[in-house]
Image 1: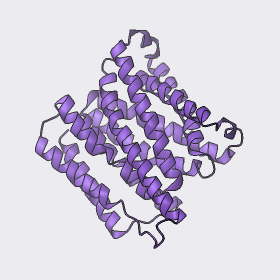
Image 2: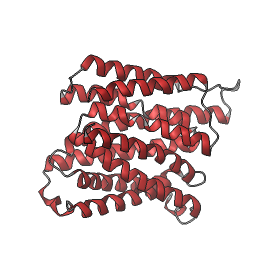
Image 3: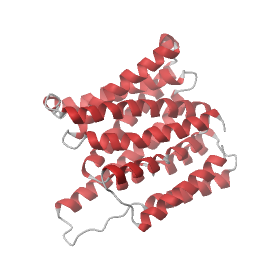
Length: 295
C-alpha cells in the first residue's frame, strides 16, 4: 500500500476520534467558543510539527498563489467547523457525521474535473455513488407529530448546519490541493490553521461571546484540547495524502472516520444504529474500498 494511502487511513482514524471528543467538549460550552478554543490547540500542535521537520523557516519561499489558496482553504475550513460543531451541539453524532461526509461526492467530482483524476473512472464513480447512497441511508429520524416541537426544530437545524459544513468541507479539499503545491505539508497545515484561528475568534468576538471563555467548564476544556490534538494529527496526515496522492481517493477514505465515530458514539453516548443506518454504513465501507482500490 502506498504511503499516501496509509496517511489517508490514519487521517480517517484521527478524524473519527475528533467527533466524539468534540461532542464531549460542547455539552455546556457554546459551539463557537469551543471551535475557537480547540483551534488554538490545533495551531500550536501544527506549528510544533512544522518546527520539528524543519519547514517553518521556509515560509518566506511560499508563492503568492499558494498563500491565496491556503488562505481560502483555511477560511472554508473555518466555515465548515463553525457549522459542524453547531450541528453536533444540537444533533446526534450518528446523523451529523454522515451528512458532513456527503461532501465527498462534491469533492470527488471537482477533483476529477480540476485535477484529471480519471484512471479507473467508472470504478471510481461507482464506488463514490455506492458510498453516497449509504450516506443518505444513514440520515434518518422518526419525527413526532408536532413538527414545531423543540426536538424537531433542533433536528432540522442540525441537518441544515451539517449540510453547510459539507459544502465548505468539499471546497476545503480542492483549495488545499492547489495551495499545498510546492509547500511542505506540515507547514501548509500550520499556515491554514492560522486562517481558521483568525476566523473562529473573529466570530466569537463579533457575536459578543468572548466573555463566555472565562466560564468554560474545565473538564470540557480537556476534551476540547484532546480533540484539537486529534484534529492536528488528522490534518497533518490528510494534507500529506492529498499533496502526494489523489484527492478523489483520499476524501473517500476519509469517510471511514464514520466507523470510529459511530463505534465511540455507541459506547459513550449509547447511540444505536437502526437496520437502515447499518445498511448505509455497510455501503459506505464497500464504496470506500472500491475507490481506494483505484489508488
